Length: 399
Image 1 (tube, one colour):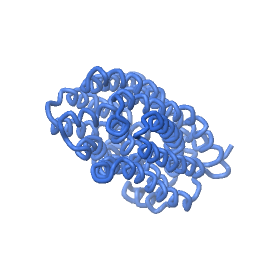
Image 2 (cartoon, helix red, strand yellow):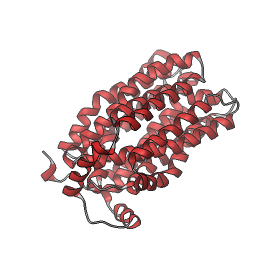
Image 3 (tube, helix red, strand yellow):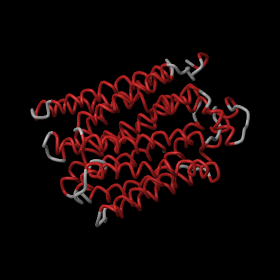
Image 4 (cartoon, helix red, strand yellow):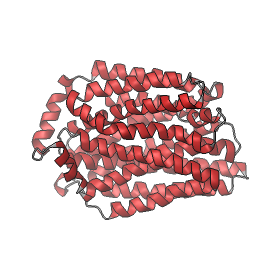
Protein backbone atom coordinates (compact mmCIF):
# COMPACT_ATOMS: atom_id res chain seq x y z
CA UNK A 1 0.00 0.00 0.00
CA UNK A 2 2.86 2.39 0.72
CA UNK A 3 4.31 1.63 -2.70
CA UNK A 4 0.93 2.36 -4.27
CA UNK A 5 0.70 5.65 -2.42
CA UNK A 6 4.24 6.50 -3.50
CA UNK A 7 3.29 5.74 -7.11
CA UNK A 8 0.49 8.30 -7.20
CA UNK A 9 2.56 10.92 -5.37
CA UNK A 10 5.48 10.49 -7.79
CA UNK A 11 3.21 10.37 -10.83
CA UNK A 12 1.86 13.81 -10.01
CA UNK A 13 5.25 15.16 -8.90
CA UNK A 14 6.85 13.98 -12.15
CA UNK A 15 4.16 15.82 -14.07
CA UNK A 16 4.43 19.09 -12.14
CA UNK A 17 8.18 19.39 -11.50
CA UNK A 18 9.17 20.51 -15.03
CA UNK A 19 6.40 23.12 -14.93
CA UNK A 20 7.37 24.86 -11.67
CA UNK A 21 10.40 26.94 -12.75
CA UNK A 22 8.91 27.62 -16.19
CA UNK A 23 5.57 28.74 -14.70
CA UNK A 24 7.46 30.94 -12.22
CA UNK A 25 9.46 32.50 -15.08
CA UNK A 26 6.18 33.37 -16.82
CA UNK A 27 5.69 36.04 -14.14
CA UNK A 28 8.84 37.77 -15.48
CA UNK A 29 11.16 36.99 -12.55
CA UNK A 30 14.88 36.13 -12.40
CA UNK A 31 16.32 32.62 -12.37
CA UNK A 32 17.03 33.03 -8.66
CA UNK A 33 13.40 33.97 -7.98
CA UNK A 34 12.12 31.09 -10.12
CA UNK A 35 14.36 28.68 -8.22
CA UNK A 36 13.00 30.04 -4.94
CA UNK A 37 9.63 28.41 -5.69
CA UNK A 38 11.35 25.03 -5.41
CA UNK A 39 13.14 26.23 -2.28
CA UNK A 40 9.91 27.52 -0.68
CA UNK A 41 8.39 24.05 -0.84
CA UNK A 42 11.52 22.53 0.68
CA UNK A 43 11.90 25.30 3.30
CA UNK A 44 8.42 24.68 4.66
CA UNK A 45 9.08 20.93 4.68
CA UNK A 46 12.21 21.68 6.69
CA UNK A 47 10.41 23.93 9.18
CA UNK A 48 7.45 21.56 9.54
CA UNK A 49 9.43 18.31 9.94
CA UNK A 50 9.85 18.41 13.76
CA UNK A 51 6.13 19.07 14.13
CA UNK A 52 5.39 16.27 11.67
CA UNK A 53 7.51 13.91 13.77
CA UNK A 54 5.65 14.90 16.94
CA UNK A 55 2.26 14.53 15.24
CA UNK A 56 3.25 11.11 13.90
CA UNK A 57 4.16 9.89 17.40
CA UNK A 58 1.01 11.46 18.87
CA UNK A 59 -1.69 10.51 16.35
CA UNK A 60 -0.15 7.66 14.35
CA UNK A 61 1.37 7.34 10.92
CA UNK A 62 -1.82 6.62 8.97
CA UNK A 63 -3.72 9.74 10.08
CA UNK A 64 -0.80 12.12 9.54
CA UNK A 65 0.05 10.52 6.20
CA UNK A 66 -3.48 11.07 4.84
CA UNK A 67 -3.75 14.58 6.27
CA UNK A 68 -0.47 15.59 4.67
CA UNK A 69 -1.58 14.31 1.29
CA UNK A 70 -4.82 16.30 1.55
CA UNK A 71 -2.90 19.51 2.28
CA UNK A 72 -0.57 19.07 -0.70
CA UNK A 73 -3.49 18.23 -3.01
CA UNK A 74 -5.47 21.32 -2.04
CA UNK A 75 -2.52 23.70 -2.22
CA UNK A 76 -1.45 22.32 -5.61
CA UNK A 77 -4.87 22.88 -7.13
CA UNK A 78 -4.86 26.46 -5.86
CA UNK A 79 -1.28 26.99 -7.10
CA UNK A 80 -2.49 26.22 -10.61
CA UNK A 81 -4.83 29.20 -10.27
CA UNK A 82 -2.07 31.61 -9.18
CA UNK A 83 -2.36 35.07 -10.70
CA UNK A 84 1.06 36.32 -9.61
CA UNK A 85 4.43 35.08 -8.40
CA UNK A 86 3.65 35.76 -4.72
CA UNK A 87 0.59 33.51 -4.77
CA UNK A 88 2.52 30.68 -6.38
CA UNK A 89 5.31 31.01 -3.82
CA UNK A 90 2.95 30.96 -0.81
CA UNK A 91 0.87 28.05 -2.05
CA UNK A 92 3.93 25.93 -2.79
CA UNK A 93 5.11 26.69 0.73
CA UNK A 94 1.82 25.44 2.18
CA UNK A 95 2.22 22.31 0.10
CA UNK A 96 5.61 21.79 1.72
CA UNK A 97 3.97 21.48 5.15
CA UNK A 98 1.70 18.69 3.93
CA UNK A 99 4.55 16.99 2.11
CA UNK A 100 6.59 16.91 5.33
CA UNK A 101 3.72 15.22 7.16
CA UNK A 102 3.35 12.59 4.45
CA UNK A 103 7.06 11.84 4.12
CA UNK A 104 7.85 11.53 7.83
CA UNK A 105 4.79 9.38 8.51
CA UNK A 106 5.36 7.05 5.55
CA UNK A 107 9.04 6.47 6.31
CA UNK A 108 8.35 6.01 10.04
CA UNK A 109 5.76 3.36 9.24
CA UNK A 110 8.00 1.56 6.77
CA UNK A 111 10.97 1.33 9.10
CA UNK A 112 8.82 0.09 12.00
CA UNK A 113 7.36 -2.92 10.21
CA UNK A 114 10.46 -4.26 8.43
CA UNK A 115 13.27 -6.25 10.07
CA UNK A 116 16.93 -5.30 9.64
CA UNK A 117 17.83 -7.97 7.09
CA UNK A 118 15.26 -6.64 4.63
CA UNK A 119 15.32 -2.89 5.25
CA UNK A 120 17.42 -2.08 2.19
CA UNK A 121 15.11 -4.01 -0.11
CA UNK A 122 12.01 -2.67 1.63
CA UNK A 123 13.24 0.88 1.20
CA UNK A 124 13.98 0.05 -2.44
CA UNK A 125 10.47 -1.36 -2.91
CA UNK A 126 8.99 1.81 -1.43
CA UNK A 127 11.20 3.83 -3.77
CA UNK A 128 10.03 1.60 -6.64
CA UNK A 129 6.54 2.98 -6.13
CA UNK A 130 7.96 6.46 -6.59
CA UNK A 131 9.91 5.20 -9.57
CA UNK A 132 7.00 3.67 -11.46
CA UNK A 133 5.21 6.96 -10.99
CA UNK A 134 8.41 8.80 -11.80
CA UNK A 135 8.84 6.94 -15.08
CA UNK A 136 5.27 7.73 -16.13
CA UNK A 137 5.01 11.26 -14.73
CA UNK A 138 7.70 13.10 -16.73
CA UNK A 139 6.53 11.66 -20.04
CA UNK A 140 2.95 12.68 -19.31
CA UNK A 141 4.23 15.94 -17.86
CA UNK A 142 5.94 16.88 -21.09
CA UNK A 143 2.64 16.57 -22.94
CA UNK A 144 0.64 18.37 -20.25
CA UNK A 145 3.25 21.14 -20.04
CA UNK A 146 3.11 21.64 -23.80
CA UNK A 147 -0.63 22.21 -23.42
CA UNK A 148 -0.51 24.61 -20.45
CA UNK A 149 1.86 25.74 -17.67
CA UNK A 150 -1.04 25.52 -15.20
CA UNK A 151 -2.49 22.11 -16.06
CA UNK A 152 0.23 20.02 -14.30
CA UNK A 153 -0.79 21.49 -10.92
CA UNK A 154 -4.35 20.22 -11.31
CA UNK A 155 -3.21 16.78 -12.42
CA UNK A 156 -0.88 16.67 -9.40
CA UNK A 157 -3.81 17.45 -7.09
CA UNK A 158 -5.80 14.58 -8.61
CA UNK A 159 -3.03 12.00 -8.15
CA UNK A 160 -2.50 13.09 -4.53
CA UNK A 161 -6.20 12.65 -3.86
CA UNK A 162 -5.95 9.08 -5.16
CA UNK A 163 -3.00 8.45 -2.81
CA UNK A 164 -4.99 9.81 0.14
CA UNK A 165 -7.89 7.45 -0.61
CA UNK A 166 -5.51 4.47 -0.62
CA UNK A 167 -4.09 5.50 2.77
CA UNK A 168 -7.52 5.88 4.37
CA UNK A 169 -9.10 2.74 2.93
CA UNK A 170 -6.33 0.15 2.85
CA UNK A 171 -3.68 1.20 5.37
CA UNK A 172 -5.32 0.10 8.60
CA UNK A 173 -3.66 -0.54 11.96
CA UNK A 174 -5.06 -4.09 12.03
CA UNK A 175 -2.81 -5.00 9.11
CA UNK A 176 0.32 -3.56 10.70
CA UNK A 177 0.27 -4.02 14.48
CA UNK A 178 1.53 -7.61 14.43
CA UNK A 179 4.56 -6.76 12.29
CA UNK A 180 5.34 -3.70 14.42
CA UNK A 181 5.33 -5.76 17.63
CA UNK A 182 7.57 -8.47 16.17
CA UNK A 183 10.23 -6.06 14.92
CA UNK A 184 10.24 -4.02 18.13
CA UNK A 185 10.54 -7.12 20.31
CA UNK A 186 13.60 -8.36 18.41
CA UNK A 187 15.47 -5.08 18.02
CA UNK A 188 14.19 -2.33 20.29
CA UNK A 189 16.80 -0.67 22.51
CA UNK A 190 16.02 0.81 25.90
CA UNK A 191 13.36 3.53 26.06
CA UNK A 192 14.47 7.15 26.38
CA UNK A 193 12.92 10.58 26.23
CA UNK A 194 12.48 12.04 22.77
CA UNK A 195 15.13 14.71 23.31
CA UNK A 196 17.63 12.28 24.83
CA UNK A 197 16.95 9.87 21.99
CA UNK A 198 17.73 12.50 19.35
CA UNK A 199 20.93 13.55 21.15
CA UNK A 200 22.01 9.90 21.25
CA UNK A 201 21.37 9.57 17.52
CA UNK A 202 23.29 12.75 16.69
CA UNK A 203 26.33 11.38 18.50
CA UNK A 204 26.43 8.38 16.16
CA UNK A 205 28.78 8.78 13.14
CA UNK A 206 26.57 6.43 11.11
CA UNK A 207 23.52 8.63 11.73
CA UNK A 208 25.47 11.74 10.78
CA UNK A 209 26.59 10.00 7.58
CA UNK A 210 22.98 9.14 6.74
CA UNK A 211 22.05 12.78 7.37
CA UNK A 212 24.82 13.91 5.01
CA UNK A 213 23.65 11.62 2.21
CA UNK A 214 20.05 12.75 2.62
CA UNK A 215 21.23 16.37 2.50
CA UNK A 216 22.94 15.54 -0.79
CA UNK A 217 19.71 13.97 -2.07
CA UNK A 218 17.88 17.23 -1.49
CA UNK A 219 20.71 19.45 -2.69
CA UNK A 220 21.27 17.68 -6.01
CA UNK A 221 18.04 15.87 -6.88
CA UNK A 222 15.30 18.08 -5.49
CA UNK A 223 17.40 21.24 -5.59
CA UNK A 224 19.87 21.69 -8.44
CA UNK A 225 18.40 19.11 -10.82
CA UNK A 226 14.76 20.13 -10.38
CA UNK A 227 15.49 23.86 -10.55
CA UNK A 228 18.06 23.98 -13.35
CA UNK A 229 17.35 21.20 -15.86
CA UNK A 230 14.11 22.74 -17.23
CA UNK A 231 15.89 26.10 -17.56
CA UNK A 232 18.98 24.49 -19.09
CA UNK A 233 16.85 22.83 -21.77
CA UNK A 234 15.23 26.14 -22.74
CA UNK A 235 18.01 28.67 -22.15
CA UNK A 236 21.15 26.54 -22.54
CA UNK A 237 20.25 24.02 -25.25
CA UNK A 238 17.46 26.21 -26.70
CA UNK A 239 15.10 23.29 -27.00
CA UNK A 240 11.36 22.97 -26.38
CA UNK A 241 10.21 22.76 -22.75
CA UNK A 242 8.81 19.27 -23.32
CA UNK A 243 12.38 17.92 -23.66
CA UNK A 244 12.98 18.48 -19.95
CA UNK A 245 10.15 16.08 -19.17
CA UNK A 246 11.83 13.38 -21.22
CA UNK A 247 15.16 14.09 -19.53
CA UNK A 248 13.53 13.44 -16.17
CA UNK A 249 11.99 10.31 -17.68
CA UNK A 250 15.47 8.98 -18.53
CA UNK A 251 16.62 9.67 -14.97
CA UNK A 252 13.60 7.89 -13.50
CA UNK A 253 14.01 4.89 -15.81
CA UNK A 254 17.70 4.52 -14.91
CA UNK A 255 16.86 4.78 -11.23
CA UNK A 256 14.17 2.12 -11.63
CA UNK A 257 16.63 -0.31 -13.22
CA UNK A 258 19.20 0.25 -10.46
CA UNK A 259 16.85 0.32 -7.48
CA UNK A 260 16.49 -3.41 -6.77
CA UNK A 261 20.25 -4.11 -7.12
CA UNK A 262 20.92 -1.11 -4.87
CA UNK A 263 18.54 -2.35 -2.17
CA UNK A 264 19.90 -5.88 -2.39
CA UNK A 265 23.47 -4.61 -2.08
CA UNK A 266 22.53 -2.54 0.97
CA UNK A 267 21.15 -5.67 2.66
CA UNK A 268 23.89 -8.09 1.66
CA UNK A 269 27.05 -5.96 1.53
CA UNK A 270 26.06 -3.14 3.86
CA UNK A 271 24.57 0.35 3.83
CA UNK A 272 27.91 2.16 3.66
CA UNK A 273 29.20 0.63 0.36
CA UNK A 274 25.87 1.39 -1.33
CA UNK A 275 26.02 5.02 -0.20
CA UNK A 276 29.59 5.37 -1.46
CA UNK A 277 28.62 4.08 -4.92
CA UNK A 278 25.72 6.52 -5.06
CA UNK A 279 27.88 9.51 -4.13
CA UNK A 280 30.64 8.67 -6.62
CA UNK A 281 28.02 8.30 -9.38
CA UNK A 282 26.63 11.70 -8.39
CA UNK A 283 30.05 13.30 -8.87
CA UNK A 284 30.30 11.74 -12.33
CA UNK A 285 26.76 12.78 -13.32
CA UNK A 286 27.21 16.40 -12.27
CA UNK A 287 30.53 16.53 -14.13
CA UNK A 288 28.82 15.34 -17.32
CA UNK A 289 26.26 18.16 -16.91
CA UNK A 290 29.12 20.65 -16.76
CA UNK A 291 30.45 19.18 -20.02
CA UNK A 292 26.96 19.40 -21.56
CA UNK A 293 26.94 23.12 -20.86
CA UNK A 294 30.43 23.57 -22.30
CA UNK A 295 29.28 22.07 -25.62
CA UNK A 296 25.72 23.43 -25.47
CA UNK A 297 26.36 25.36 -28.69
CA UNK A 298 26.39 21.96 -30.41
CA UNK A 299 22.76 21.20 -29.65
CA UNK A 300 22.80 17.50 -30.53
CA UNK A 301 25.93 16.71 -28.52
CA UNK A 302 24.72 18.81 -25.59
CA UNK A 303 21.36 17.03 -25.60
CA UNK A 304 22.98 13.58 -25.66
CA UNK A 305 25.23 14.55 -22.75
CA UNK A 306 22.20 15.85 -20.84
CA UNK A 307 20.42 12.51 -21.21
CA UNK A 308 23.59 10.63 -20.24
CA UNK A 309 24.03 12.78 -17.13
CA UNK A 310 20.40 12.35 -16.10
CA UNK A 311 20.73 8.57 -16.48
CA UNK A 312 23.86 8.50 -14.30
CA UNK A 313 22.17 10.68 -11.70
CA UNK A 314 19.20 8.31 -11.72
CA UNK A 315 21.45 5.36 -10.88
CA UNK A 316 23.17 7.46 -8.23
CA UNK A 317 19.86 8.28 -6.56
CA UNK A 318 18.92 4.60 -6.42
CA UNK A 319 21.96 3.90 -4.25
CA UNK A 320 21.69 7.13 -2.26
CA UNK A 321 18.01 6.70 -1.38
CA UNK A 322 17.57 3.17 -0.02
CA UNK A 323 20.82 2.77 1.96
CA UNK A 324 20.67 5.80 4.31
CA UNK A 325 17.04 5.14 5.20
CA UNK A 326 17.92 1.53 6.00
CA UNK A 327 20.82 2.73 8.17
CA UNK A 328 18.48 4.94 10.18
CA UNK A 329 16.13 1.98 10.56
CA UNK A 330 19.02 -0.11 11.90
CA UNK A 331 19.75 2.54 14.53
CA UNK A 332 16.06 2.86 15.47
CA UNK A 333 15.73 -0.86 16.09
CA UNK A 334 12.02 -1.11 15.31
CA UNK A 335 10.86 1.64 17.67
CA UNK A 336 8.49 4.47 16.87
CA UNK A 337 10.93 7.31 16.30
CA UNK A 338 9.23 10.26 14.67
CA UNK A 339 11.86 12.80 15.76
CA UNK A 340 15.02 11.06 14.45
CA UNK A 341 13.20 10.37 11.18
CA UNK A 342 11.99 13.98 11.04
CA UNK A 343 15.57 15.24 11.43
CA UNK A 344 16.69 12.77 8.77
CA UNK A 345 14.04 14.18 6.44
CA UNK A 346 14.95 17.75 7.40
CA UNK A 347 18.42 17.28 5.96
CA UNK A 348 16.95 16.50 2.54
CA UNK A 349 14.72 19.54 2.85
CA UNK A 350 17.66 21.72 3.90
CA UNK A 351 19.51 20.61 0.77
CA UNK A 352 16.40 21.35 -1.28
CA UNK A 353 16.31 24.87 0.15
CA UNK A 354 20.00 25.68 -0.30
CA UNK A 355 20.48 23.88 -3.62
CA UNK A 356 18.08 25.87 -5.84
CA UNK A 357 19.02 29.22 -4.28
CA UNK A 358 22.76 28.64 -4.64
CA UNK A 359 22.33 27.20 -8.13
CA UNK A 360 20.07 30.08 -9.16
CA UNK A 361 22.57 32.62 -7.86
CA UNK A 362 25.46 30.91 -9.69
CA UNK A 363 23.36 30.71 -12.86
CA UNK A 364 22.61 34.43 -12.75
CA UNK A 365 26.23 35.40 -12.02
CA UNK A 366 28.44 32.73 -13.60
CA UNK A 367 26.37 30.42 -15.84
CA UNK A 368 25.16 26.84 -15.85
CA UNK A 369 28.59 25.20 -15.56
CA UNK A 370 29.32 26.67 -12.13
CA UNK A 371 25.78 25.91 -10.98
CA UNK A 372 26.25 22.23 -11.89
CA UNK A 373 29.80 22.12 -10.53
CA UNK A 374 28.64 22.98 -7.01
CA UNK A 375 26.69 19.70 -6.93
CA UNK A 376 29.87 17.71 -7.55
CA UNK A 377 31.78 19.73 -4.94
CA UNK A 378 29.22 19.09 -2.19
CA UNK A 379 29.19 15.40 -3.15
CA UNK A 380 32.93 15.16 -2.47
CA UNK A 381 32.45 16.56 1.05
CA UNK A 382 29.66 14.08 1.83
CA UNK A 383 31.76 11.23 0.45
CA UNK A 384 34.49 11.98 2.99
CA UNK A 385 31.93 11.84 5.83
CA UNK A 386 30.51 8.50 4.69
CA UNK A 387 33.93 6.90 4.17
CA UNK A 388 34.77 7.60 7.81
CA UNK A 389 31.47 6.24 9.20
CA UNK A 390 30.88 2.69 10.55
CA UNK A 391 28.57 0.08 9.04
CA UNK A 392 25.15 -0.26 10.72
CA UNK A 393 24.23 -3.68 9.30
CA UNK A 394 25.81 -6.19 11.67
CA UNK A 395 27.61 -9.17 10.19
CA UNK A 396 25.14 -11.53 11.82
CA UNK A 397 22.38 -9.82 9.80
CA UNK A 398 24.13 -10.08 6.43
CA UNK A 399 22.29 -13.13 5.11
